[in-house]
Image (tube, rainbow, N blue to C red; front, side):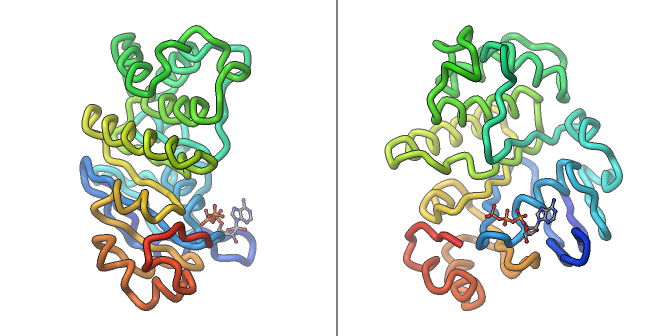
Length: 243
Ligand SMILES: Nc1ncnc2c1ncn2[C@@H]1O[C@H](COP(=O)(O)OP(=O)(O)OP(=O)(O)O)[C@@H](O)[C@H]1O
């Protein structure tokens, strides 16, 4: 469904992405890993339209969207989260989802919002003020809920587990698996926790210094010498791989 073709993104003299060619299939969950500064968030920004590609192509369902602005990409089904949760101030949890739904690809659909609230564990907080009443895990769940409210066919999750303790991470992973099954959306997950990536993603892609250095099943990719080298040996033993 998504094709990146020799994608290049430069900031001044720095190539944050260089020659990235990658395909994401309908309904799959792809893990995107790599050390700090590898270009993972820049890749999400180039897919969602927050930054423009310097060179190369982004295609969704065969349509060239390389020059399409961000709001139009949301309308054709690209949803995303941001590393720092960004609830809309002064609005309730449900109102945040209503606004997100208007921004996105679907018609107003209260039943979908109810399902999202239930499945993200936010139903009891639906009428609470989003910015002031939620704990970190709930803010993270709201970030995912807002992205899902846009009715995406491709969902980009940027480190949604970061900052959660072990039990919270496990609950969040189970929640994401449930959401994926229910909404049948393709997902790309940026995550530093390799154990979480192994659980969530049948396929992973590895970025290092802006280049795609490996892709395939986690068990194979995490054994590749270039991947081990970019993590200086921490990736293979399944522990959290901090770049
Ligand atoms: N708007 C920008 N202007 C200039 N440089 C940028 C900009 N955004 C990112 N960069 C640079 O591009 C490179 C890739 O950054 P990016 O945030 O995409 O990496 P990342 O893999 O997501 O890192 P992390 O795991 O720390 O989130 C870095 O060198 C970063 O400093």
